[in-house]
Image (tube, rainbow over all chains, first blue to last red; front, top):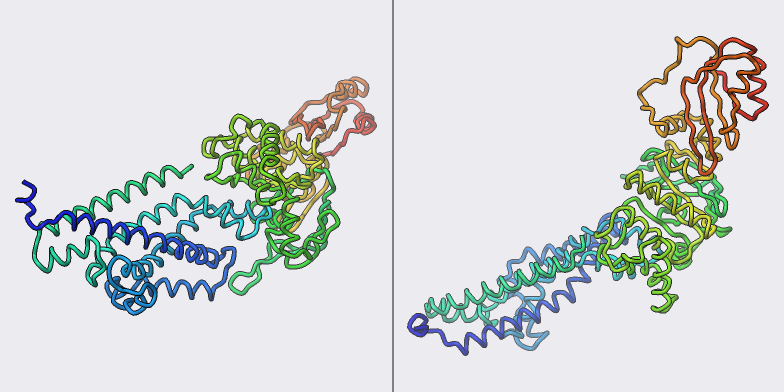
Length: 222
Length: 335
């Protein structure tokens, strides 16, 4: 029955592509947070009337973030090829997709993190300062814990954006479900493969959103 | 304990200096509860934050326990701040941490005590403010008064000598305000803690403060013992605050008793004299008749006071005035 409806779908390949997508998502999300969170904290701290108010640095960081965010991801994918080969040795497959994914998502996550940190009541910072905390202690013990629901929401948005980016990376041989959709669904005109990949991506996005929402609720104490 | 020598502060906004505090000198003694009262923008919040240097002074010297706080480097300043507790109008508790973790935070940041010692200290502090059974709740689950008591416990965690209160009762209802003020008065006594509080309510000053400074336009316009300032306000701003405390609307003119015959006096009794059967005796002995036109009997901290406006007719008025004067009653002849 299923074979009649989906004649071109080869399930082991779908399975492998799904695993690749998850690997790309997991790997790129990890590095995006690793780079994006400190960048977001720095953007926040150097921002106007914040703890390390520093106009030139804030403007520079802002500019870099804005430039990276205004480059369409498809262009970024192509522009990044030489750099990606330098970093991970290949620009192909799941591994080759991770550097452009990280570069594409880090500025987004940094901005969202900055906004989440700004949502923290200034009084909390003042109270922690009044306890004699260092800036580092304020960030680690007050800002990040207080911004946790906002940061989790930012992480959810970023993860979902990364899912669509992983699909796009299929265009330049990035592997995963997007790659499958491009090669079978588009180039060979096999709509059944296209449908299955799209449904799987949809399920993934739904899953990420509901897990994210649940975590936000779990850590909101307001 | 706290000494301001010619301290002033201006904010730089768009290249122009906006003065927040004019050159101010002030002394706050160890163990006293010192109140700063003023409307918003009067400079009281700036003055309070200069004490733990959340605000940097533009000039002048601030001595805390004999130590010039304006000369401290970053690490010495953090040490100073650990010796100064602070509570806030909106409590500023961390929503992401339990009550116990909020109270433990200053100790954790100071990094001097092991975890077990911190837990013991936190338990003891929560016991003191009556919140032991709420230790594992989050701030959002508490009432305003409970939140402020967590704030007080947190501020006391590092055993400070000074407690700064930034409009600590302004977000609370009258009953809760009374409880929080009561708690502040108790810890002031128990720990010989110096408390500096800012408020815009004269009632708060009357209930807990020993001394008060009235601020207006970035300067202290009047200061002294609360009873003196409250019962005999000199500056117009102070008078307005006293009227507010008596629930007289500012716009509403006080009755000038034009239609009442006789001499009109305002008598101020303090301490035990408040409850002495003085008026009756004076009236009997000097033959004057009195009618009470307005009055208030209350307490300033623990000291009872009464302030009565009287009309006196007939009899020997001079003798009556002399008797009142001899009885340590402050007499003002209004007409």
